[in-house]
Length: 398
Image 1 (cartoon, rainbow, N blue to C red):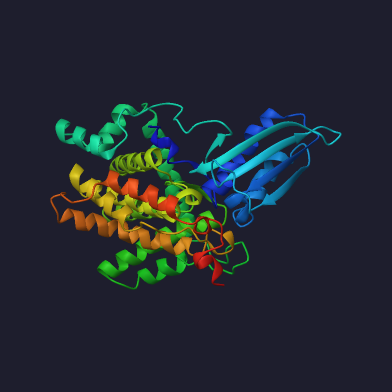
Image 2 (cartoon, rainbow, N blue to C red):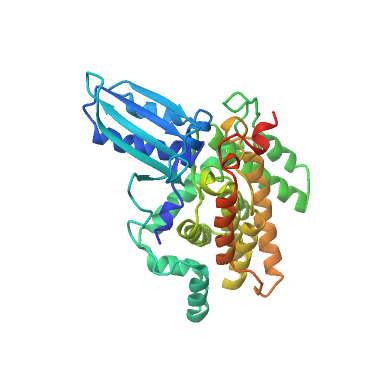
């Protein structure tokens, strides 16, 4: 299983699979064809269906047109066999003839694969890849999930998590100050500042919930506008973990050291899902994005509040279980409706999952690993129009 650094990627929104991944592919292809007279990129399936809303063409063109012209070809009705997010890059000589060709797949979370490559991790950081086995290790050793991360990762993981936490905080702070309409043509106004201001007028639990909403909205709106964020595990779900951690950091005075440990635990749960299933909305729907982010945030919150390893696992299980079947149906292909509201709601669900598990002894019927299996199968059973194509669900009601 790969490093949790693959779960937390720092970059610009609005989509890890539709913006970060294609940009990374363009950068690789630039190195493969530095002397091209021109280039042509063909986008397939989900990547073509919602690419304009996700700024896929802009990410590619900004990179490839630095030294030569580039044409984008859109083929939303053609799905390549390996993954819904396929893209073929061609380098043309000065007579317009192709001489280098490479197909890439954006497989979620900003990761890409070349045609013919497998999903095997490049570096096996963790020797265990199920929460069941890691939980057993925790109970036997008396240690927690973050200590397993510390044991397996390189020592620089804590510096990296500090950088992740810094970017998350900055996104919250920018987002609760920003006003205006989000780009894309839907006329969606930023709401974070309004929720933040209104929350001050309430007391106790209502204020707490209002602030949590505001923080999730803030980061999600930053993502929708192409701002700098952290995938957790994706761009489309990037507001959930920061909202929960920033809220607990500021309202409960949890130290940054404890926040980093909570980030490590959350990343571990995300890495398990990515290894055994998927975090790609184009592959398994929004359950793999918002559902997994909710599970990560629930695990982090449970650890911060002193949950046992079993209670932490239970929190994460509920966070994912109660998002099973969630479709990826962005209106006009933009990471705005319903994505932004889903981040705010899932942040609240994460804290609810933590509270529910805290009242228990951690014992429950369905394990986190089993929910991951069900999520994967559910995602594969979902028709493609409900997976980031903007052809089903909420995406077709306007």
